[in-house]
Amino acid sequence: MKKIDMIIRNGQVFDSVNAKFEKKDIGIYQGVFVALDEDTQSNNEVDAEGNYVVPGIIDEHAHLNLYGTIIGANADTVCIPNGITTACDGGTCGASNFEQFYMSNIVRYESTVYSYLNVSTFGNKSLCKHEEDHDPADFREDLIDSLFEKYPQVLRGLKVRMCKETLGDHGISPLHVGIEMSEHLKAKGYHCPVAIHYDDLPENVTVKELFGTMRKDDVIAHVFQTKAETIFDENGKIKDCVWDAKKRGVYMDDCHGRVHWSYPNLQNAFSQSFYPDIISSDLVRVSEYTRPGFSLLYAMSVNSAAGMPTEKILQSVTYTPAKALGIEEKAGVIREGAPADVAILDIRDVKDKTFTDNYGNSISGNKLFVPLMTVKGGRTAYRQIFF
Image (cartoon, rainbow, N blue to C red):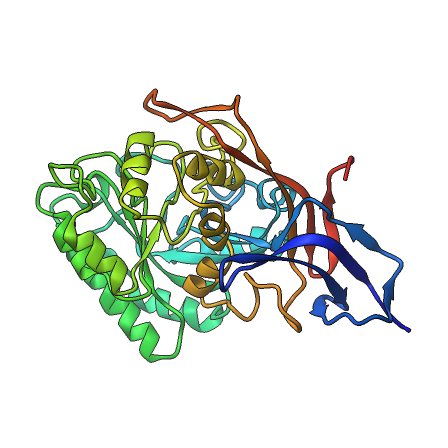
């Protein structure tokens, strides 16, 4: 007889690589997934009958520098209770304050937290209109280099904010400089895509130029945003340059937040089979558990209501963000030998739920993703009292 730490039985287990379910049991021993046989037993058995067992959810873009900035959400309250075992800060910090974030928050959070590094030296501190200086002359490549050398396992890329408030008269040049720095860091062996905040472009930057500049494995956040030039042409069709970027391997990130999407944009895109590769929360302090931002699970429910299939939704918060962050061996999958991070969800069919976006558009919900249990590294970190 073989004794292990935990067996989760009877659940619909999500194969995140192939985006499909299989009813089976899974075992956990000493913090990793292990194979089961007829003689395997555990004093800790969880019955997941009628529910869904998925890899620990990944929130690829949230703002988690708690107290270091006024926008930082608390990963311990927005991640583990929502089945999120891994998160990545969306570039809150630049070279001047990343180490404070690391020492004060990252090493203390229960969820594993990675980070993009903002090319702006002081990062994004307070949601002020002009706070992120994107004058390329002020980018400190020397400091960025030293931080990647010191924290290569934590830093997952560079953040560039592409919008009117940060670009000023610089046009697209901050992105080109960010990509040059990314290429320099990649040549040194670091995982370093560029993740951009796409929003309210100035007149001297076009969607065609922006999407055409992005490389395979880069990330475009807020792809369904509503301001200035969007991903849709005058007839409501997804622009060719957007499709081209997606086809060559640029990750399209819903990066939900409150103001960066609308139901008409989601439904229009989904009707053309254009789905986000990644769904992330973009949570900040003022939006955690406050609609229409609320949480990553809420964003998943919103995308379901707009027409995104459940399997695509679950893949967009597990395996795909793991690939984008370069952590496929550490997160996003349930397989023998991988770290035992699990979210057990009740995916409820609903008919009487109405969702409303930030612009007053409403839609009827069809599914709610309800967290029942979170396992982090083999330890039960959260569990509903009735489960």
